[in-house]
Image 1 (cartoon, rainbow, N blue to C red):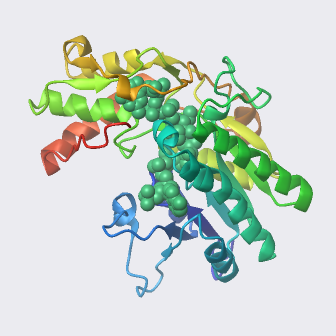
Image 2: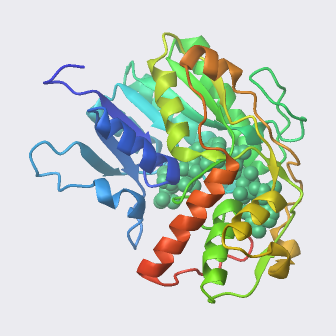
Length: 342
Ligand code: NAP
Ligand code: GDD
Protein backbone atom coordinates (compact mmCIF):
# COMPACT_ATOMS: atom_id res chain seq x y z
CA UNK A 1 0.00 0.00 0.00
CA UNK A 2 1.22 3.55 -0.66
CA UNK A 3 -0.21 6.98 0.16
CA UNK A 4 -1.88 7.57 -3.20
CA UNK A 5 -3.31 4.10 -3.74
CA UNK A 6 -5.00 2.63 -0.65
CA UNK A 7 -5.81 -1.05 -0.56
CA UNK A 8 -9.39 -1.64 -1.70
CA UNK A 9 -11.58 -4.28 -0.11
CA UNK A 10 -15.07 -5.39 -1.10
CA UNK A 11 -17.18 -6.87 1.70
CA UNK A 12 -20.42 -8.72 1.05
CA UNK A 13 -22.52 -8.87 4.22
CA UNK A 14 -21.10 -5.55 5.41
CA UNK A 15 -24.33 -4.81 7.33
CA UNK A 16 -24.00 -8.00 9.39
CA UNK A 17 -22.20 -8.61 12.68
CA UNK A 18 -18.86 -9.63 11.14
CA UNK A 19 -19.09 -7.16 8.27
CA UNK A 20 -19.31 -4.26 10.69
CA UNK A 21 -16.27 -5.33 12.73
CA UNK A 22 -14.26 -6.13 9.61
CA UNK A 23 -15.07 -2.70 8.19
CA UNK A 24 -13.78 -1.05 11.37
CA UNK A 25 -10.59 -3.12 11.19
CA UNK A 26 -9.90 -2.38 7.52
CA UNK A 27 -10.64 1.35 7.84
CA UNK A 28 -8.19 1.47 10.78
CA UNK A 29 -5.61 -0.17 8.53
CA UNK A 30 -6.09 2.52 5.87
CA UNK A 31 -8.17 0.51 3.40
CA UNK A 32 -10.84 1.92 1.13
CA UNK A 33 -13.81 -0.29 1.98
CA UNK A 34 -16.61 -1.06 -0.43
CA UNK A 35 -19.69 -2.74 0.95
CA UNK A 36 -22.52 -4.53 -0.73
CA UNK A 37 -25.89 -3.53 0.76
CA UNK A 38 -29.29 -5.03 0.01
CA UNK A 39 -31.95 -2.53 -0.91
CA UNK A 40 -34.75 -2.64 1.65
CA UNK A 41 -37.70 -0.40 2.43
CA UNK A 42 -36.25 0.43 5.83
CA UNK A 43 -32.59 1.11 6.55
CA UNK A 44 -30.54 -2.00 7.35
CA UNK A 45 -27.24 -0.25 8.05
CA UNK A 46 -27.50 0.16 11.86
CA UNK A 47 -24.26 -1.70 12.53
CA UNK A 48 -22.17 0.50 10.25
CA UNK A 49 -23.90 3.88 10.61
CA UNK A 50 -21.19 5.06 13.02
CA UNK A 51 -18.58 4.49 10.28
CA UNK A 52 -20.42 6.13 7.42
CA UNK A 53 -19.54 9.56 6.09
CA UNK A 54 -21.10 11.28 3.10
CA UNK A 55 -19.26 10.02 -0.01
CA UNK A 56 -18.79 13.65 -1.13
CA UNK A 57 -16.60 14.26 1.92
CA UNK A 58 -12.98 14.43 0.83
CA UNK A 59 -11.11 11.32 1.96
CA UNK A 60 -14.27 9.25 2.55
CA UNK A 61 -13.11 5.64 2.49
CA UNK A 62 -16.35 3.71 3.08
CA UNK A 63 -18.49 3.29 -0.01
CA UNK A 64 -21.75 1.37 -0.15
CA UNK A 65 -23.30 -0.21 -3.23
CA UNK A 66 -26.75 -1.71 -3.67
CA UNK A 67 -26.44 -5.33 -4.76
CA UNK A 68 -27.55 -8.83 -3.89
CA UNK A 69 -25.76 -12.18 -4.02
CA UNK A 70 -28.60 -13.53 -6.13
CA UNK A 71 -27.85 -10.99 -8.91
CA UNK A 72 -24.84 -12.29 -10.85
CA UNK A 73 -24.57 -9.52 -13.43
CA UNK A 74 -24.50 -6.89 -10.69
CA UNK A 75 -21.59 -8.69 -9.03
CA UNK A 76 -19.63 -8.66 -12.30
CA UNK A 77 -20.22 -4.92 -12.69
CA UNK A 78 -19.13 -4.23 -9.12
CA UNK A 79 -15.91 -6.24 -9.31
CA UNK A 80 -15.14 -4.64 -12.66
CA UNK A 81 -15.66 -1.07 -11.45
CA UNK A 82 -14.23 -1.35 -7.91
CA UNK A 83 -11.23 -3.51 -8.88
CA UNK A 84 -10.78 -4.68 -5.28
CA UNK A 85 -7.51 -6.15 -3.99
CA UNK A 86 -9.41 -8.25 -1.46
CA UNK A 87 -12.96 -9.65 -1.45
CA UNK A 88 -14.54 -10.90 1.78
CA UNK A 89 -17.65 -12.98 1.13
CA UNK A 90 -19.57 -12.71 4.40
CA UNK A 91 -23.10 -12.43 3.01
CA UNK A 92 -25.41 -15.35 3.70
CA UNK A 93 -28.76 -16.41 5.04
CA UNK A 94 -26.89 -17.32 8.21
CA UNK A 95 -29.56 -18.67 10.56
CA UNK A 96 -29.55 -22.46 10.84
CA UNK A 97 -33.15 -22.83 12.09
CA UNK A 98 -34.43 -20.48 9.37
CA UNK A 99 -32.62 -22.55 6.74
CA UNK A 100 -35.07 -25.40 7.42
CA UNK A 101 -37.95 -23.02 6.68
CA UNK A 102 -36.29 -21.43 3.65
CA UNK A 103 -34.05 -24.18 2.26
CA UNK A 104 -34.11 -23.09 -1.38
CA UNK A 105 -33.42 -19.43 -0.62
CA UNK A 106 -30.62 -20.47 1.73
CA UNK A 107 -29.08 -22.61 -1.01
CA UNK A 108 -29.37 -19.73 -3.46
CA UNK A 109 -27.61 -17.15 -1.25
CA UNK A 110 -25.38 -19.14 1.10
CA UNK A 111 -24.39 -21.65 -1.58
CA UNK A 112 -24.82 -20.32 -5.12
CA UNK A 113 -24.03 -16.74 -4.04
CA UNK A 114 -20.41 -17.82 -3.62
CA UNK A 115 -20.07 -19.21 -7.14
CA UNK A 116 -21.64 -16.04 -8.56
CA UNK A 117 -19.03 -13.95 -6.78
CA UNK A 118 -16.13 -16.19 -7.76
CA UNK A 119 -17.33 -16.18 -11.36
CA UNK A 120 -17.54 -12.38 -11.26
CA UNK A 121 -13.91 -12.28 -10.12
CA UNK A 122 -12.91 -14.65 -12.91
CA UNK A 123 -14.99 -12.88 -15.58
CA UNK A 124 -13.51 -9.51 -14.65
CA UNK A 125 -9.97 -10.93 -14.86
CA UNK A 126 -9.47 -9.76 -11.27
CA UNK A 127 -6.55 -10.98 -9.19
CA UNK A 128 -8.34 -10.10 -5.95
CA UNK A 129 -7.70 -12.30 -2.95
CA UNK A 130 -10.91 -14.02 -1.84
CA UNK A 131 -12.09 -14.92 1.66
CA UNK A 132 -15.00 -17.34 2.09
CA UNK A 133 -16.94 -17.32 5.37
CA UNK A 134 -17.05 -21.06 5.91
CA UNK A 135 -18.54 -22.48 9.06
CA UNK A 136 -18.12 -25.10 11.77
CA UNK A 137 -21.71 -26.09 10.88
CA UNK A 138 -20.10 -28.01 7.99
CA UNK A 139 -18.77 -30.54 10.55
CA UNK A 140 -22.30 -31.13 11.78
CA UNK A 141 -22.57 -34.65 13.13
CA UNK A 142 -18.82 -35.39 13.16
CA UNK A 143 -17.76 -35.41 16.80
CA UNK A 144 -15.29 -32.87 18.25
CA UNK A 145 -12.55 -31.76 18.38
CA UNK A 146 -12.83 -30.55 14.77
CA UNK A 147 -9.92 -29.29 12.68
CA UNK A 148 -9.11 -28.70 8.99
CA UNK A 149 -8.90 -32.48 8.35
CA UNK A 150 -12.22 -33.37 9.99
CA UNK A 151 -14.82 -34.79 7.54
CA UNK A 152 -17.92 -32.70 6.90
CA UNK A 153 -21.37 -34.03 7.83
CA UNK A 154 -23.78 -31.09 7.58
CA UNK A 155 -27.08 -31.29 9.47
CA UNK A 156 -29.07 -28.43 7.90
CA UNK A 157 -29.73 -26.77 4.55
CA UNK A 158 -27.43 -23.98 5.83
CA UNK A 159 -24.61 -26.42 6.62
CA UNK A 160 -25.01 -28.15 3.24
CA UNK A 161 -24.91 -24.79 1.41
CA UNK A 162 -21.72 -23.84 3.28
CA UNK A 163 -20.12 -27.16 2.28
CA UNK A 164 -20.82 -26.32 -1.37
CA UNK A 165 -19.26 -22.88 -0.92
CA UNK A 166 -16.24 -24.35 0.83
CA UNK A 167 -15.53 -26.75 -2.02
CA UNK A 168 -16.18 -24.27 -4.82
CA UNK A 169 -13.75 -21.87 -3.14
CA UNK A 170 -11.13 -24.62 -3.05
CA UNK A 171 -11.93 -25.54 -6.64
CA UNK A 172 -11.36 -21.99 -7.92
CA UNK A 173 -8.04 -21.97 -6.09
CA UNK A 174 -6.97 -25.21 -7.80
CA UNK A 175 -8.61 -24.70 -11.20
CA UNK A 176 -7.91 -21.01 -11.85
CA UNK A 177 -5.22 -20.07 -9.35
CA UNK A 178 -7.50 -17.67 -7.45
CA UNK A 179 -6.02 -16.72 -4.06
CA UNK A 180 -9.09 -18.12 -2.31
CA UNK A 181 -9.12 -19.09 1.37
CA UNK A 182 -11.74 -20.63 3.63
CA UNK A 183 -12.03 -19.44 7.20
CA UNK A 184 -13.83 -22.23 9.05
CA UNK A 185 -15.13 -20.13 11.90
CA UNK A 186 -16.79 -21.54 15.00
CA UNK A 187 -19.59 -19.57 16.67
CA UNK A 188 -18.58 -16.01 17.45
CA UNK A 189 -20.73 -13.47 19.16
CA UNK A 190 -20.80 -9.87 20.32
CA UNK A 191 -23.23 -7.13 21.33
CA UNK A 192 -23.88 -6.78 17.57
CA UNK A 193 -25.02 -10.41 17.22
CA UNK A 194 -28.43 -10.83 15.58
CA UNK A 195 -31.26 -10.95 18.13
CA UNK A 196 -32.40 -14.49 17.25
CA UNK A 197 -29.07 -16.31 17.72
CA UNK A 198 -29.00 -18.06 21.06
CA UNK A 199 -26.40 -15.99 22.91
CA UNK A 200 -27.97 -12.65 22.03
CA UNK A 201 -31.48 -13.95 22.63
CA UNK A 202 -30.33 -14.90 26.13
CA UNK A 203 -28.42 -11.71 26.96
CA UNK A 204 -31.22 -9.43 25.69
CA UNK A 205 -33.70 -11.39 27.79
CA UNK A 206 -31.44 -11.21 30.87
CA UNK A 207 -31.27 -7.42 30.56
CA UNK A 208 -35.03 -7.17 30.18
CA UNK A 209 -35.79 -9.59 33.02
CA UNK A 210 -33.37 -7.77 35.33
CA UNK A 211 -35.17 -4.52 34.41
CA UNK A 212 -38.58 -6.05 35.14
CA UNK A 213 -39.68 -5.87 31.49
CA UNK A 214 -39.91 -9.62 30.80
CA UNK A 215 -40.77 -12.61 32.95
CA UNK A 216 -40.11 -15.70 30.81
CA UNK A 217 -37.69 -16.86 28.13
CA UNK A 218 -38.72 -19.63 25.73
CA UNK A 219 -35.86 -21.81 24.52
CA UNK A 220 -35.16 -25.03 22.61
CA UNK A 221 -32.35 -27.55 23.15
CA UNK A 222 -30.22 -26.55 26.14
CA UNK A 223 -27.80 -29.48 25.81
CA UNK A 224 -26.10 -28.36 22.57
CA UNK A 225 -22.37 -27.73 23.03
CA UNK A 226 -20.75 -24.76 21.32
CA UNK A 227 -17.34 -23.11 21.16
CA UNK A 228 -18.25 -19.42 21.50
CA UNK A 229 -15.63 -16.74 20.75
CA UNK A 230 -15.63 -12.98 20.37
CA UNK A 231 -16.43 -11.61 16.89
CA UNK A 232 -13.96 -8.64 16.80
CA UNK A 233 -11.09 -11.12 17.30
CA UNK A 234 -12.40 -13.42 14.55
CA UNK A 235 -12.41 -10.74 11.84
CA UNK A 236 -8.72 -10.17 12.57
CA UNK A 237 -8.18 -13.84 11.64
CA UNK A 238 -10.03 -13.28 8.34
CA UNK A 239 -7.71 -10.42 7.44
CA UNK A 240 -4.62 -12.42 8.40
CA UNK A 241 -5.69 -15.24 6.07
CA UNK A 242 -5.59 -12.89 3.09
CA UNK A 243 -2.16 -11.52 4.12
CA UNK A 244 -0.72 -15.06 4.32
CA UNK A 245 1.79 -16.01 1.64
CA UNK A 246 -0.51 -18.64 0.15
CA UNK A 247 -4.24 -19.40 0.11
CA UNK A 248 -5.29 -22.05 2.59
CA UNK A 249 -8.08 -23.15 4.92
CA UNK A 250 -8.08 -22.38 8.64
CA UNK A 251 -10.19 -23.27 11.67
CA UNK A 252 -10.82 -20.28 13.95
CA UNK A 253 -12.13 -21.19 17.41
CA UNK A 254 -11.35 -20.99 21.12
CA UNK A 255 -11.03 -24.74 21.78
CA UNK A 256 -13.39 -24.43 24.75
CA UNK A 257 -16.87 -25.87 25.14
CA UNK A 258 -20.03 -24.80 26.91
CA UNK A 259 -23.63 -25.93 26.65
CA UNK A 260 -26.49 -23.54 25.97
CA UNK A 261 -27.47 -24.24 29.60
CA UNK A 262 -23.99 -23.06 30.70
CA UNK A 263 -24.46 -19.84 28.74
CA UNK A 264 -27.82 -19.31 30.46
CA UNK A 265 -26.23 -19.88 33.85
CA UNK A 266 -23.37 -17.47 33.11
CA UNK A 267 -25.63 -14.73 31.75
CA UNK A 268 -28.36 -14.89 34.41
CA UNK A 269 -25.67 -15.32 37.06
CA UNK A 270 -24.15 -12.05 35.98
CA UNK A 271 -27.24 -10.19 37.24
CA UNK A 272 -27.66 -12.43 40.29
CA UNK A 273 -30.57 -14.49 38.92
CA UNK A 274 -31.16 -18.24 38.51
CA UNK A 275 -32.08 -19.06 34.91
CA UNK A 276 -34.29 -21.95 36.05
CA UNK A 277 -36.78 -19.45 37.43
CA UNK A 278 -37.36 -17.92 33.98
CA UNK A 279 -36.53 -20.36 31.17
CA UNK A 280 -39.35 -22.36 29.58
CA UNK A 281 -39.23 -24.94 26.81
CA UNK A 282 -40.81 -24.37 23.40
CA UNK A 283 -40.40 -27.07 20.76
CA UNK A 284 -40.59 -24.53 17.94
CA UNK A 285 -36.97 -23.65 18.73
CA UNK A 286 -35.80 -27.21 18.08
CA UNK A 287 -34.24 -28.09 14.73
CA UNK A 288 -35.28 -31.19 12.72
CA UNK A 289 -31.65 -32.30 12.95
CA UNK A 290 -29.33 -30.79 15.56
CA UNK A 291 -25.58 -30.25 15.67
CA UNK A 292 -24.80 -31.64 19.13
CA UNK A 293 -21.25 -30.50 19.73
CA UNK A 294 -18.75 -28.15 18.10
CA UNK A 295 -15.30 -27.62 19.64
CA UNK A 296 -12.56 -26.29 17.38
CA UNK A 297 -8.84 -27.01 17.23
CA UNK A 298 -7.31 -23.72 16.10
CA UNK A 299 -3.69 -24.95 16.16
CA UNK A 300 -3.08 -24.28 12.46
CA UNK A 301 -4.28 -20.66 12.69
CA UNK A 302 -2.11 -20.20 15.77
CA UNK A 303 1.00 -21.66 14.08
CA UNK A 304 0.68 -20.05 10.64
CA UNK A 305 -1.26 -16.85 11.27
CA UNK A 306 -0.13 -16.12 14.82
CA UNK A 307 -3.78 -15.86 15.86
CA UNK A 308 -5.05 -16.77 19.32
CA UNK A 309 -8.39 -16.02 21.03
CA UNK A 310 -8.38 -13.88 24.14
CA UNK A 311 -12.04 -13.46 25.13
CA UNK A 312 -13.55 -16.77 26.23
CA UNK A 313 -17.20 -17.62 26.84
CA UNK A 314 -17.62 -16.44 30.47
CA UNK A 315 -16.17 -13.02 29.65
CA UNK A 316 -18.16 -12.94 26.40
CA UNK A 317 -21.42 -13.49 28.28
CA UNK A 318 -20.49 -10.66 30.64
CA UNK A 319 -19.67 -8.27 27.75
CA UNK A 320 -22.98 -9.06 26.04
CA UNK A 321 -25.16 -8.79 29.15
CA UNK A 322 -23.57 -5.47 30.10
CA UNK A 323 -24.02 -4.13 26.56
CA UNK A 324 -27.68 -5.16 26.51
CA UNK A 325 -28.28 -3.57 29.90
CA UNK A 326 -26.66 -0.34 28.67
CA UNK A 327 -28.67 -0.43 25.43
CA UNK A 328 -31.89 -0.96 27.35
CA UNK A 329 -31.24 2.15 29.40
CA UNK A 330 -30.63 4.19 26.26
CA UNK A 331 -33.27 2.98 23.86
CA UNK A 332 -35.85 1.22 25.99
CA UNK A 333 -37.34 -2.01 24.82
CA UNK A 334 -37.27 -2.89 21.15
CA UNK A 335 -37.38 -6.64 21.58
CA UNK A 336 -39.89 -8.07 19.18
CA UNK A 337 -40.91 -11.63 19.76
CA UNK A 338 -42.51 -11.87 16.34
CA UNK A 339 -40.04 -14.17 14.61
CA UNK A 340 -41.40 -17.25 16.28
CA UNK A 341 -39.36 -19.97 14.62
CA UNK A 342 -35.87 -18.53 15.03
P1 NAP B 1 -25.19 -11.94 9.83
O1 NAP B 1 -25.05 -10.98 10.96
O2 NAP B 1 -26.43 -12.75 9.70
O3 NAP B 1 -24.98 -11.09 8.48
C1 NAP B 1 -25.28 -11.64 7.23
C2 NAP B 1 -25.07 -10.58 6.16
O4 NAP B 1 -25.39 -11.12 4.88
C3 NAP B 1 -25.94 -9.32 6.33
O5 NAP B 1 -25.19 -8.19 5.95
C4 NAP B 1 -27.05 -9.57 5.33
O6 NAP B 1 -27.67 -8.40 4.87
C5 NAP B 1 -26.26 -10.21 4.21
N1 NAP B 1 -27.07 -10.93 3.23
C6 NAP B 1 -27.97 -11.92 3.46
N2 NAP B 1 -28.51 -12.35 2.30
C7 NAP B 1 -27.93 -11.62 1.32
C8 NAP B 1 -28.08 -11.56 -0.09
N3 NAP B 1 -28.93 -12.38 -0.74
N4 NAP B 1 -27.33 -10.68 -0.78
C9 NAP B 1 -26.49 -9.84 -0.15
N5 NAP B 1 -26.31 -9.82 1.17
C10 NAP B 1 -27.03 -10.71 1.91
O7 NAP B 1 -23.97 -12.97 9.82
P2 NAP B 1 -22.56 -12.90 10.60
O8 NAP B 1 -22.74 -13.50 11.94
O9 NAP B 1 -21.99 -11.55 10.44
O10 NAP B 1 -21.71 -13.95 9.75
C11 NAP B 1 -20.99 -13.54 8.60
C12 NAP B 1 -20.76 -14.76 7.72
O11 NAP B 1 -20.02 -15.73 8.43
C13 NAP B 1 -22.02 -15.46 7.24
O12 NAP B 1 -21.76 -15.97 5.96
C14 NAP B 1 -22.19 -16.61 8.23
O13 NAP B 1 -22.91 -17.65 7.64
C15 NAP B 1 -20.74 -16.96 8.47
N6 NAP B 1 -20.43 -17.55 9.77
C16 NAP B 1 -20.85 -16.94 10.91
C17 NAP B 1 -20.49 -17.48 12.13
C18 NAP B 1 -20.92 -16.83 13.43
O14 NAP B 1 -20.86 -17.49 14.46
N7 NAP B 1 -21.30 -15.56 13.41
C19 NAP B 1 -19.70 -18.64 12.19
C20 NAP B 1 -19.28 -19.23 10.99
C21 NAP B 1 -19.63 -18.66 9.78
P3 NAP B 1 -28.90 -7.73 5.68
O15 NAP B 1 -28.27 -6.94 6.79
O16 NAP B 1 -29.56 -6.88 4.64
O17 NAP B 1 -29.75 -8.85 6.20
N1 GDD C 1 -31.28 -19.60 17.90
C1 GDD C 1 -31.67 -20.37 18.97
N2 GDD C 1 -32.81 -20.02 19.65
N3 GDD C 1 -30.92 -21.44 19.29
C2 GDD C 1 -31.31 -22.19 20.36
C3 GDD C 1 -32.46 -21.88 21.11
C4 GDD C 1 -33.25 -20.75 20.74
O1 GDD C 1 -34.25 -20.43 21.35
N4 GDD C 1 -32.57 -22.78 22.11
C5 GDD C 1 -31.54 -23.62 22.00
N5 GDD C 1 -30.77 -23.27 20.93
C6 GDD C 1 -29.58 -23.99 20.45
C7 GDD C 1 -29.63 -24.39 18.98
O2 GDD C 1 -30.44 -25.56 18.81
C8 GDD C 1 -28.15 -24.61 18.70
O3 GDD C 1 -27.78 -25.91 19.09
C9 GDD C 1 -27.46 -23.61 19.62
O4 GDD C 1 -28.45 -23.14 20.54
C10 GDD C 1 -26.84 -22.41 18.90
O5 GDD C 1 -27.83 -21.84 18.05
P1 GDD C 1 -27.56 -20.48 17.26
O6 GDD C 1 -27.11 -19.43 18.19
O7 GDD C 1 -28.78 -20.21 16.44
O8 GDD C 1 -26.28 -20.80 16.37
P2 GDD C 1 -25.87 -22.05 15.46
O9 GDD C 1 -24.80 -22.79 16.19
O10 GDD C 1 -27.05 -22.82 15.02
O11 GDD C 1 -25.28 -21.34 14.17
C11 GDD C 1 -24.39 -20.23 14.31
O12 GDD C 1 -23.06 -20.67 14.33
C12 GDD C 1 -22.61 -21.26 13.09
C13 GDD C 1 -21.16 -21.69 13.33
O13 GDD C 1 -21.12 -22.90 14.02
C14 GDD C 1 -24.67 -19.26 13.15
O14 GDD C 1 -23.97 -18.05 13.38
C15 GDD C 1 -24.21 -19.83 11.83
O15 GDD C 1 -24.32 -18.84 10.81
C16 GDD C 1 -22.74 -20.24 11.98
O16 GDD C 1 -22.25 -20.79 10.78
